[in-house]
Image 1 (cartoon, rainbow, N blue to C red):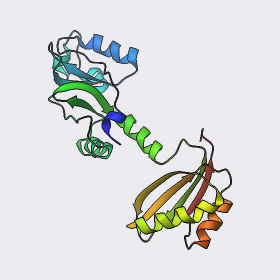
Image 2 (image 1 turned 180 degrees about the vertical axis):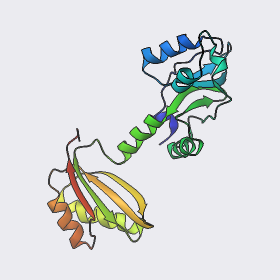
Image 3 (image 1 turned 90 degrees about the vertical axis):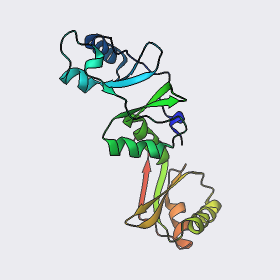
Length: 201
């Protein structure tokens, strides 16, 4: 998944000479917490946050007085995992997205959370099984072969390391996990967690 798949575009912006009161009104009206700052040519020169405006701004001051100049940026083809790492490591809540120097969007921590939820199938109705693995490639093939005879439609496979051991989250469009669990156990797999949820959960 790439930044372009999750970024907000077009992005609401402000200018260095805009007064901070106007910028704050824009944030409240658009229900956003960050504004990239662009000059008269549309080039990115900074970013201003709701905290900047609430904590640093004085009456009539321009955005330039409180913005962060030369903010960190990513490109539209940056992997989402890289953008997430940057947000975490830099301690920021958003990254402007530049394509050949042109501002084309913004990616925020909320966008990252939404992508994470999608990858885990958190908003999908159905069964979620957490299965420890020994060999990722071989075991995933084995899991798919095991569940195929049940007729269950597998909707997602997400791998991660649980205490150093490879593990997969299997999501399936089913309401009853019993057939899936029996098939996995018969094939030598032991689910460590089994849950069923509605789409609204």
